[in-house]
Image (cartoon, rainbow, N blue to C red; front, side):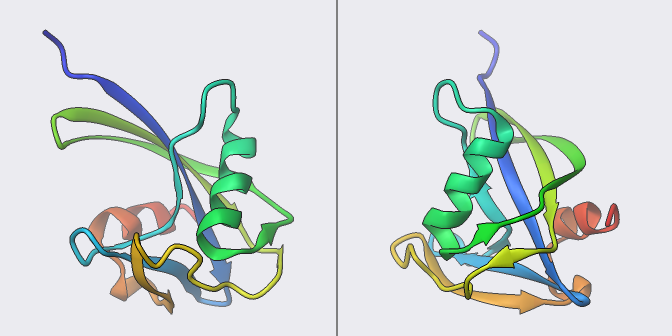
Length: 121
């Protein structure tokens, strides 16, 4: 039996030379805001919803950056990343049960996979 393929979308929210990241409760890693689309949602709709749920802002611009495919937790994860450089609101941790904190990180503070994505900015 083949492992499942799961889709996700993620936002690279940029301010100057820093990128908004969320520290995961599960493993302490830093990740970009995003998540899995609900049934019938396209990438843009899912990402706008996820960004609002996780950090409480409205992205005014979403530009496709790149896609990745990785195997983790018994599944293939296929993700599309979008750049957001303009938004309304002040980012805040809206899901403390999932994220211990949020922060603006420089490229050298990101995990290797996030650094790869940022290299497309």
